[in-house]
Image 1 (cartoon, rainbow, N blue to C red):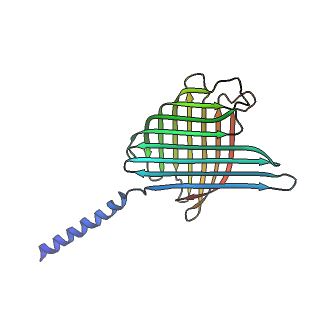
Image 2: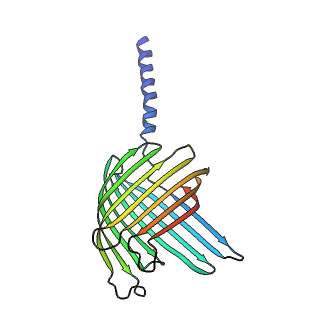
Image 3: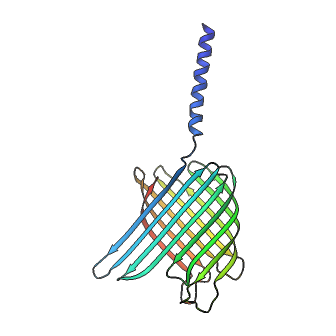
Length: 247
């Protein structure tokens, strides 16, 4: 009888220690991400409209992590369009877990207020997850790629379209500094290896949970083009407050 009690107690202890391990090792959801939307509409003596929307989704397929991103910005001032930009990105990381991985990405942009009709870039390279904690992550990526920039024929009729090999660099930092607040910093750069222009993007943000999956996000974005054209500024900045929904 004493032996049976000892065996039973050992089994209960083993099950009790296994339950937390199973919870800790639970796989992440196969599909997750966030959607955000912000808008300001002013009428009266001044009429302005600003709309910013973004969807950033992650889809896990086995050991492959797929990222799909769409970012839209639209602005009007006194009935005249003053800004219109569409940016999309796909990236695949393999493997989805572990310190080291390989990545492949392609992105495209249409910005109505530049000398380009559109820009398309693609790259392959190496990534490293430098910090992987429940409340903090840091990763870095680098690799070679290629970029094609189609000029607007009305703005640069005498110039050939631009194509160049690039070095793709990315640094992504995320920190949950309280139970309801997060900080993030993302920097990407397509560095031209020839005579083309280098395009660098940065987003710095803070978000705070409101209720459930809904949060408020304050972000500051910078886009820098080393050769924007004779009548354009090299740096665009956007300060935005948006509602963020996580799924």
